[in-house]
Image (cartoon, rainbow, N blue to C red; front, side):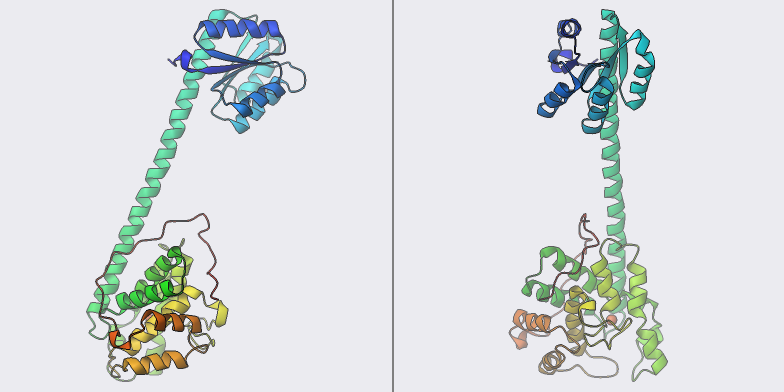
Length: 366
Ligand SMILES: [Fe+2]
């Protein structure tokens, strides 16, 4: 049973005498009562202070009980409404129940009946609110579980990337170094933390599509034939396809995976994007990826010196590479003798918290 003395009730009737009867009854049961002489007055009072229970007559000037009920249901769905009807208005009372009133009492009142209806209405209200709370908590728990499952999938994919690289002495540690360079460039450019996180995520997974490339081709010593080269270069598209179900809310990270071999001059692949068509997050990772590739030994060539690799970045500005990101790279690593970085320890990746604007656009690059 509800605790009446903790419950505030608003009694709405244009006839003061009937209002007083109800108020006296309810106050006798321990309720605190407020009174309104019309629907309009009741609404004003509710705007000022919400109450758990409204008992309203149906026939009133200005706004009748049905109008008031509609407003209450729309604005304060947790408020229980009981309508008061004349016997001849039973049809209207039923219509009110369909609209969302919790009960009705017919005039003339029987005090016991009013008391019972009020208590029942408050019980229904409490159950309804408990159910809503439960539903809300359940939704939250389901969302948390779904997110945990996504994180677990992410952990496995991250492990897969490192496993693939570990098998190949030429690419060992590549992804985690690229993530490290990319993160430092992004921070140097003053990008928001949320964007930096997406860049770290995309950078570390950027080559995951190599899982779909034949190992024979991947580890081939010497020059690749044209078809072999084309086969290897399918990895950005394969990677984006692998990650798409997991990263539907992180389009910029997916773009990094798909487009990290694009060039500003439009001569990259797979889509031949040019200039601003390439998201800023991608342009950051491209520089990190290229620098790490250049300063690593490959089966078909020795590693370039740091000086030569930096020169390549510089000469590639505005053709292959985004000039502000190249400058940020140089500012983030001012001492060439500290380059290339040693491979950092792998840290678990996280999906960025979903934002209402999950399909957000790429940040401006200038
Ligand atoms: Fe790649």
